[in-house]
Amino acid sequence: MISTGSPPRIGVFLPHAYFGGTLRLWLNVVRHVASRHDGLVVAGVLEEHSSSMVAELATIHREFPRAEIRNFRWHVVDPRGARTAAVKHGVPVGRWISADYQVPSDGERDFRDCDFWLFVSDRLDRPLVPVRPYGILVTDHLQRYVPEIFEGGAYADSQSAAWNFLRNVRNADLVVATSRDTAQDVATYAGALGRILRLPTALDVDHFLSLQTGGVAAGPSVCGGDYFVWVTNASPHKNHLRMLQALRRYYEELGGGLDTVVTGLGTECFDSRLAGTARRHASQIWDHPHVRQVRELLDGPCAGIRHRIHLRGLVPDPEYVRVVGGCRFLAHNVLADNGTFSVVEAALLGRNAVSSDYPQMREIDESFGLGLRFFDPFDVAATARAIRDAEREPRFLPAGVLERIREHDWRRWDGALISAIAEIVGRGRPEVACL
Image (cartoon, rainbow, N blue to C red):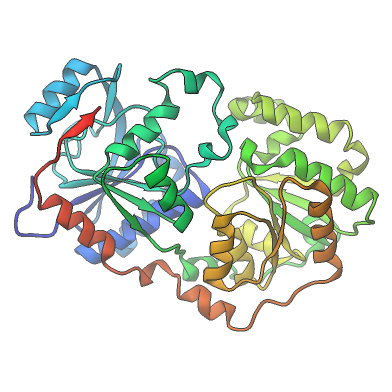
């Protein structure tokens, strides 16, 4: 243990090159820890990702000058090295069952000057050598509900990332969940053995509203006419194939009058006309079998409505505000996930939303009082009708919704996370049964 009789020094890691919601969540956790600990935080950033996080890192420097930002790489350790490190740091392990392990490495102190490690995502490809007590923030266990997000062989291989994600959660001293249902999954699916803590959903309201400087542009400047926004990304759980089938019904059978503007990471790869340079830059997404299916559907059965669908890809935050601010409503369609703040952001801009119906979105709707219109993500006809109804029977946002959203700003988080970490740091290290 590094610190005694003083607040623990906490490393807060973004373990993958995330953008969007996970990146913003990491930023808000860093800010929360820094605000509670007067700067006793080390923000761990993947070395190859730091150049893509200029705005987020500038925010940390500006608000918390004493907070340290440190680049790291994942260092792979063989079983012998892992055993040596565990013994050196007083970590008892019952059985060693993995082919290799990993630790975050900054090339100097390797974050061992921290008392606790907190990873904002469970996507740790290999078992972590727990030379420090650690926690994992879990937004969802999507694979429980959409197992096809992993290739079939992943579940047959006990050393695969699919199993290691769960192994790391199971062995964590603390697991932080962002919704009620995810907290239940952490206990019953991942089998977490440590403490499970709910962290209320939160966002940075002031930052989002500041992006409106200069006003919100009107809709026609985005696509030439009235439209709604479909916020998504290229992952298969986003239900693209059914959504496109629903859009075909909306236009061809229900007389839909709004264009569809699609935004989100990788969505430009749905466009078969994407320039060769852009294809090569996003080759991993472009070549994915699911993304190829989406292109085939757009160019085949949906060719007749293709001119009504505008693929924008991932747009900068100010442009995103402009696009959402100019739309008639926002559409969100997934099979399962941790829920999306895009519906909350739309409400901040005075726009309502339609959403597929699953527990995490029900919780967001309840927490923020949004009055969402829900549909069954497996029912193409119901999805088309929901979009048609949102166009023809617009709903007004409930009274007081902006005040309720402000109650969920990250600055309103209490001290439960810091207290849980301090308690864990102050006790002895428990045995890890299997690592």
